[in-house]
Image: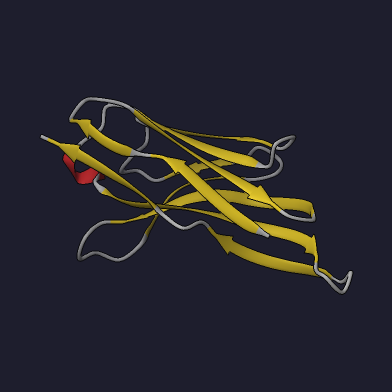
Length: 123
């Protein structure tokens, strides 16, 4: 099982970017999916999450500017970022609670992380 993130890049302040993350493997169920970010010299922080039931959490720092969504048919989670600010500059990581079958055909619960994708916002 792995999470593969894509998107991000460079944007000007006030601009928009989108991130996407796809889970692959012998997945049975994905519970909470979300995005975290880590700015240079700072701790990793939670940005937004969406549960399998559709409950959404968005951090105050991005509320009203970032939108999280998921597509359970494709096992993907997306983050649309609008009105970007220089302080949004960070490496963004997707995260998911996944139930899957391993090579021994055993059920395994995994808190999986994507590889990180950079977002840089210039002023």
